Length: 506
Image 1 (cartoon, rainbow, N blue to C red):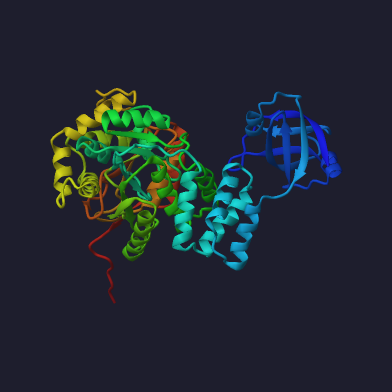
Image 2: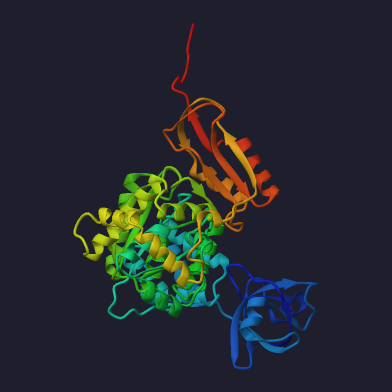
């Protein structure tokens, strides 16, 4: 049964599933439409599928409430007449159900259909959740992961570099202060290799590479602009959020975040599909390993390495993994502005050893993958950093992206509200909790408020006296600092252990 409705445009965007409409209960009963049913909306030569929510009062009979995403796509103004009819669920739901019930491997065509329906917003949050839960509890085999990776990549734009070899570095994350891309990209670019680094904004961490780079220069560009800038400077550091590279991934990621779920197969497909779309040939993958990371043990990290290397090889990417220490923050600064300062200071020759060592180790792997050196890539990367060539290249990249190439660390402003966290006892720093450092930084306002964050003054193994400054917390708003201090009162982010563990007498 078909009906015509007048539109009422509602300025609401649905987070993970765009296509949502509101119908009056009276109209839904006439059409025999239930909440969460699908309808097909037609206007002129355009049509779109949407999920139905039912209301008794917000929408009058004879009207259909269109969420912003739908009226933007249909390009309909308030009061426009559209045609509506009930439509069936897509076949991709049957494929997901079959996987759950019978554990039957997906075919490439089935994965193509599922991802297309996710991208077209024909699957709801619940249905995408089932797709992810199935991956978590019925792991995909290697062939399925290869197909999933290719399907995700081929759904969107793929940048063609011709016969040029493209390099990149990626991390699975989990460690605060991990600003190494801001050193690795200019090191590799200064060596003459092409390294367009497409980064993410922070999801649960205090700052993503894109958040930190945005302190220096604009980060939103088209695929053609990224290609043109890379060919001019050998490297860029941009945000991938507005690029059509593996476009279903952002929708899937938003649902994963709601579920606090990250299936291994989806991690691999997400990483590699974006690199295929970017045109990457060779890459190094940073795998932080530690108690608060995705890879808790060295054995887990090694197993993951072998798996992702195998999948990468089968999709045409030469990949090497670097398993790195993830037991405490990288460097001493956490938060966009503070990390930007520390990265620039390190490029200028006076940064922390942990940041330098990790950056040149991973850059060295890429240099060895390039064939520039068979062994000793570490020393070549170190020379490029120590000589100032990487700093010169970074300033060139900043300028090409539209920033101020002459920026100094002190030009970068940080939050005016501060609190110094002091040692309550004498002893040795036993543990710095990455998890609590992340939470405190987020409560301070990161990454939205660029000047918020934490500056550490100690690392594990350091000896401290009672009253010594352990870290300084920065916020741009006083209430954010207050919220962070409430957490510190309950949980201690830095644990100090005395040399005397206990004293026992009669």
